[in-house]
Image 1 (cartoon, one colour):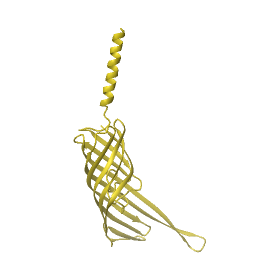
Image 2 (cartoon, helix red, strand yellow):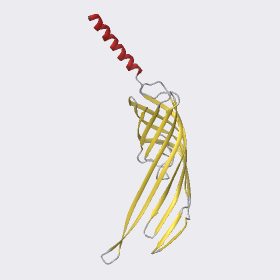
Image 3 (cartoon, helix red, strand yellow):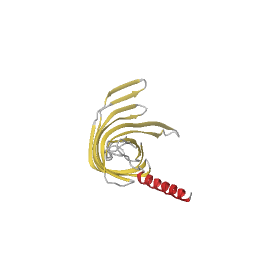
Length: 236
């Protein structure tokens, strides 16, 4: 009986040891991961969030909007194809107070809003044979589209916005537990942005007049970026 108990205990310990060695923390070929990204303060200019590229406030280094989602499919244990999606919407309201000189004030209200949607496909190649850490290099290209709108009591202006971004990157995923990871990324990116002419509307009483806008702006930037973001992902 003692011999049987000893053999059973040895078999159990051996099974647990093998299971611990074989435990999969990192994705393998044919696995899919889904990642949520939150990067406060990083908007359009270069491409990021996993990729420095698009955002809602145009004119910064190219990065995904404040909130972004990235999906990755591992073709092999090391090579993954990825797709970043992002959406951002900002709005501001300003109240202007004018003293009428008779102990009264006139209040006028102005609003400005912008929206942006971005899509960015790319690839990643993961390096090393670490158990819980997965450094990688990658590249991606993408576009963003959106609009800017300013409104007041006597006017309204709208303009379309288009962006293009390309970047190469290096990053690392750290696997907190089986299937769950966090990460950070930095790289080199190029971003281009165009604000179209749009339309200008004048409102005078019951009369509304709309005409083409009189300005069109194009900006581009190139440089290093870092993604000060919290990236949390799961793989299946």
